[in-house]
Length: 124
Length: 132
Length: 307
Image (cartoon, rainbow over all chains, first blue to last red; front, side):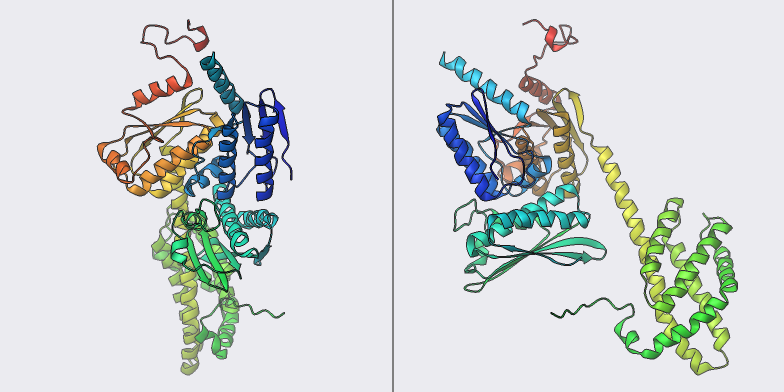
């Protein structure tokens, strides 16, 4: 099942709607990493609110996604991780180290806007 | 309740297996946070099957210990088997890429864990989670 | 495909194998049914005499005695204990809150066993050989019934105690919202793995429902922490971050600090501040509030602050 990617100003928003297979997830990663370049986006939000499982493969794919996006000059923030999913992840040792996280879409946008503002200030 | 058997040969089966696990565990009265734990364990076990044996089966059973219900997850395949089971249980061990957290992680979040593997014949992992 | 199902036999194998046991039990059932009124009364009288179930009125005792008597006879007749077990749990649920003790429940079932045995004795005293066989069949079944009821009572009691403990735990550590987006979790007392898990689940849910950005976990009131609980604390910090919240841990005792160093905690992941006051100040800085000395503009809403 393909995940729709929305372009919102300088950001890309991928809102996952239902459980994803490994293949779907890899496709999403590749699509986002590709579109960051074609749209010259400054940030990516992946909304995982609908996911009831984030296992080792999903965590690794999200982490790789964030790192690849950074290498292409943009920031990634993962939003909407459910409380019980977060607890299970850390018990498995999956902490998404080095990847920004936020409560929900609104917070994710706030985070990226702040990030954008601070980089514009430093480059001025 | 009868055993639930989910054949595993594609990553779509993996999604199906964890949904089935969630349903059974829900029927057994597990708490919401435990459903996530159980679904995640099934995900890791099923992926191990796909990755190392390409095909196999997840069997879900209900268990009972002096009135306490539990769920048993059996992941079995007829793949190449694991030469050194003890090493496979060390965190960080992995032969096909990945974080190598699969089996040790599952052991950590489940109450009981057993693995039997024979090179050339396959692997059976049996884990149990009791309702708290 | 053929399938073999094994299920637990209601009687132990030795009893079940002896055909006569079941038929003997069936033979005494009509006798117990015929004399129901009289035996039931005798039982209720013995209960009162033994000063059991004092928390209940005579009427109540008689009603319950009737139900238990019928279930008892039925269990003897069918050899299945499920209905009796279910009734025992239901009864326990009703009488436990009224202060009925385990010894009373065991006492009344043993009294019934005794009342019925005496009645059988009276009936078969002419034929001693038969009486022996009857009692041989009756006794194990009666013991099993007594056991079923007592175990049901104890399990129900344990369940109620567990529920109460959980309720007390929920109450004992509230997740407090001190201001918008800031939660405080003051932990006091002994933390075992179960309580630790409960605290974490409570906190994570709290973060989501209150849309918290910063959490201060104050462990000043925690005397000691083993490495398992310390690891759990680290996991709680990590899980909160996955939800988008920053955790500040305050009030670490020297002993707990040592435990955390021993388990090799990554200090880069752990935000720690000496005391709760300092933690709240740190949290407010993270939230973008300015900390101003008392007497200045402390009561002013944020939007009205100059600058």
